[in-house]
Amino acid sequence: MYTPSDFPPFAVTVDLVVLTVRSDALCALLVRRGEAPFRGRWALPGGFVRVSESVDAAAARELVEETGVSGLHLEQLATYGEPRRDPRMRVVSVAYLALAPDLPVPVAGTDAAAASWVPVSEVSTLAFDHARILSDGVERARAKLEYTPLGTEFCGAEFTVAELRRVYEIVWGVSLDPRNFHRKVTGVDGLLEATGETTTRDGGRPAALFRRGPATALHPPLVRG
Amino acid sequence: MYTPSDFPPFAVTVDLVVLTVRSDALCALLVRRGEAPFRGRWALPGGFVRVSESVDAAAARELVEETGVSGLHLEQLATYGEPRRDPRMRVVSVAYLALAPDLPVPVAGTDAAAASWVPVSEVSTLAFDHARILSDGVERARAKLEYTPLGTEFCGAEFTVAELRRVYEIVWGVSLDPRNFHRKVTGVDGLLEATGETTTRDGGRPAALFRRGPATALHPPLVRG
DNA sequence: TCTCCTTGTCGTCAATCTGACGATAACCCT
DNA sequence: AGGGTTATCGTCAGATTGACGACAAGGAGA
Image 1 (cartoon, rainbow over the protein chains, first blue to last red):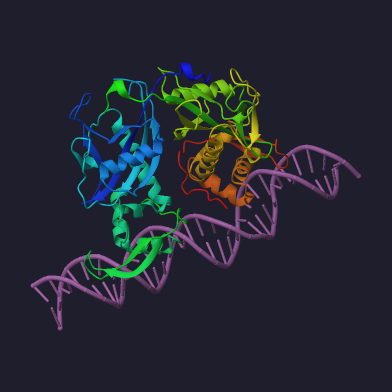
Image 2 (cartoon, helix red, strand yellow):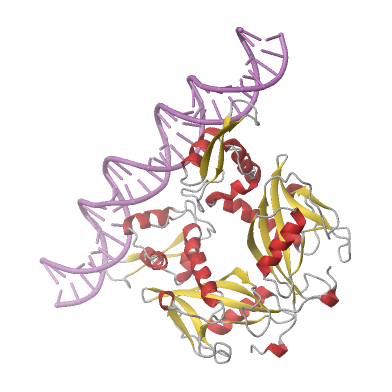
């Protein structure tokens, strides 16, 4: 074993599940394929890993190319390696999950065809096994909101407690009591840092603005309805 | 993009982090390499994915080959794809985590050199980037004990509450109050199913024997520390 | 057999946490 | 000025948690 000469050759790609919360829906970034197979079908953005580049770096590169924004949270989701998942050849794809705030710039598809944000509830069939990858990504995001500060990644740099609460409500599809949510979220050590500023952009009484704090895990976790 | 002719060729392997609890220590299954590079060095068991086989199936196949036992819990851990992680060629490795009860049969290394259980606290340097993979696997196992019934995978088919508690104590490296642990663990819905039998194999008063229940998540979770 | 030792299981209690919800504050608009 | 909207604080009962006492039920050895 481990003889370099006789290993079966694989293509390795990265696929991105990029999620955002916009206009009251959890949305995924999808591109419309311009070539066969699955021509004209929606697919996850992604591409080949280059020879001299790490898989993580390939994912980061694709993410910047697709969203035009760098610095987004990016984590490995899973790897998909069924023999016939790409009809042309043996492809193993490493999927990544990225969470983005509602991006001010529309997505600039450099090499891909039209890219757009699609509410995950309206996604029907996707190319390859991308429907499953997307669904795994959404489930991972839902789970991670419980015990990590990841919900803040959907917000801008500064946000109110109510904006964060709406992220949770939309991603989980539940409604949360504003008062209890406020108590819990401000009680978690290191989750939020007050800026001292307030905003009235949500209407009503001015709300305090916060930044992400240094916490990497939530103790205690927020529990899903 | 996506033209089958000009993709960079990769080798794809699976690496296994197989953990068990034995003689008061969390142990990993390691093999000693018989060939260069890293000849004579400990490494994780693993091997090439075959052309017509899914990556998951390759992991399952290697697991049976290495442990001689089938039906073990197996889940994907992460994928490691740094360009120079194997000095010979570009290898992307999909790592899997498996949890095993203390296996009665010693490990029968079919193609690998000597395989043995090594306490994770005594593991020093490993071949390739396997030290990092092992450490990621251990951390994943620790985290999953909190909110999944995975601790039961370290036990046999029938086990006592105290045996399960020792799994938690050893994996987490803490000591837990037997009475509170008993209350929590028997209170979680669907975690344990009483067999009606008792055993005195741990000494002292006979303890009730349980089977794994149908629960897939723990509500509420068990908390570390 | 009697005692001791070991381990398992049930109970108690105070501190904390949770969820439901009342009350008030502070803005905007008319 | 008054009504609508949202933010934030408080209260209170019920559940959960951690610390720990008490007792049960086996084995080992005197």
